[in-house]
Length: 389
Figure 1 (cartoon, rainbow, N blue to C red):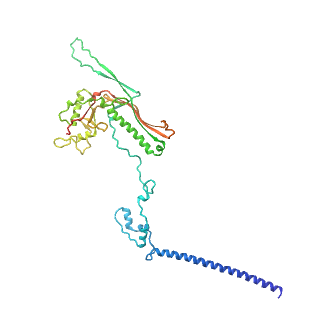
Figure 2: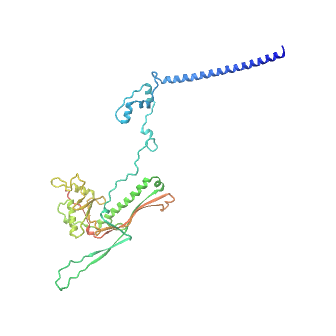
C-alpha cells in the first residue's frame, strides 16, 4: 500500500466519525422534541379535564351580562323601569348566579368616596325668613350728620276771632320746641377661617346675603318697638298715641277696632292714616269674619286676599306681637328715616390674633335715625276683647 492510499483511508475514517457525531446530535434533538410534545399533551389533557367539569350537556355556559343583553324582556324591563321579564338559565348558568355577590348601593357607596355619582344642587337653602315690609312704608332720606334736629310746634296758634272795625285785634302766640334724634348703628359679625371662605364659595355668598338680612330684621324691630334708650332707635309704637277704647262700639270686631282708630286720628286733626301693621294671626281672624248670611266680609276665598281695609294698606308681620296693631301715615310730614350709612359688609383679619390664626371677621352694619315728627298720627293698641266676628 503506497502513501497515497493511506491518506485516502485516513480521510474517509475522519468523515465517518463526523457523520456519526452529527447523527448522534440529531437523535438527541428528536428525543428532546418528543419530551416537549409529551409535556404539551399533558397540559392539553388537564385543560380538557377542567372544561369537562364545567360543561353540561356539551354547552359552554353564557356569561350573565351577555345573557341579559340578549334577552328582550330584560332589556325592556331596564328601559321602562317597570313590568316583568322571564329569563331561563341552564344548570351551568345557575352556578354562576350562586357564586356572584349581590351588588347594592350600600356596597358601592353613594357618598363622595363611593363609585356612584350624586346630583348636587348648588347653593345653600336658607332657613325660613319673614318678608321685611315696615321700612317701605316710611319716607327715607340721607344725612351726613350724626345727630338730626328738627323744630316742631309745641303750642299752636289760636283760632282767629271776629274783630269790630277800628278795634284792637286779639294777639296770638306760637311756641316751638327743638327735638334731636341720634344716628344709631345696627350691626352683627361672625368669625370664619380664610380657608373655608376660599374653598367654599357658596358659604361666602350665603354669609354675604344672610348677615345684611338679619341687620335689616333688627332694623324693622327697632322701627316698630325701639324704646330710645342707649343705642336703640325711638320706634313708632312707643311714641304712638294709645287707642281710645271709648270710641269702640260694644262687642266690636277687629274691623270695628280699626274703624275706631281712623276716627281717633281724624278727630285729632292728624294726617290721614295710610297703613295698618298687625300680626298674621289677627289678619287671619279678619279674613274669616262672616256676615249673617255666612259670606266672608273681606272677599271671596278664591281671590288673592285683602290688601286694604277701610282704605288702609294691610301689612302683616311677625315683628309685631299677636293682638297688637299700629295704624299710621307713611307721609314724610309724620315721620321719616334718615340714613347715615347704607348697608356695608366688610371682611378683615384685624381682630385679636386673627391674622396669625388665618381667620377673618365678617361684619355687616348700617347707621340710621328715625324721626317721628307727628307722634299723634300713629295710634297703637290691642284687640283685647274683640269679638271673633
